[in-house]
Length: 221
Image 1 (cartoon, rainbow, N blue to C red):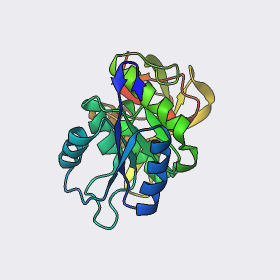
Image 2: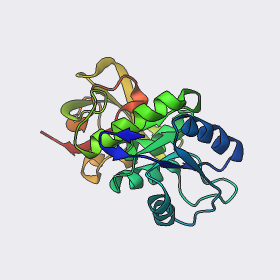
Image 3: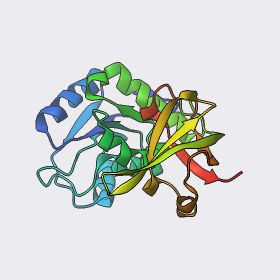
Image 4: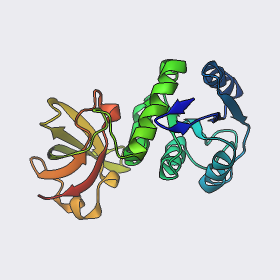
């Protein structure tokens, strides 16, 4: 498969569950690409990236990899690291809220986040195409970064482990609150997190759902 000048012939399929690896691989093979069913285990992100880079031109990864000693890292960290190496990659998750808290810090480097039931030959091809576009600094509307106003709506304890912050993006949807964790925000913001405080961040305000939003480059003006 050729995507915007990049040839993808082999795809690493990374999942601790062999049955999921097989299903994803069948979709890959529908596109006349070879699926490399990665058995693991992987001791580090660097080792996994090295294996993918040496054998394939793209990857599909589940989010929960720290199962059955399959890997020491989660799929979000892996996909973001592959993005840094300009290797197209898709992250699969069921969009559980706890997962999203862990994924969001990596989201600027995860162009394709799909539920397993959304994955098929067409969505794989489209996702890889979007990844390659971003490597050339070309963003589809849902991923294009914009500097925008972010208003703090509420600050509250979250399971006594972290502080949850509800934020509003007037330029995206002023009626929907997006929950962030204080740990996702730069340290200089922590003491300033009070209701009605205003900040700015680079956000993909063309996103269609909260799960696809990313935040980076926070500032006060």
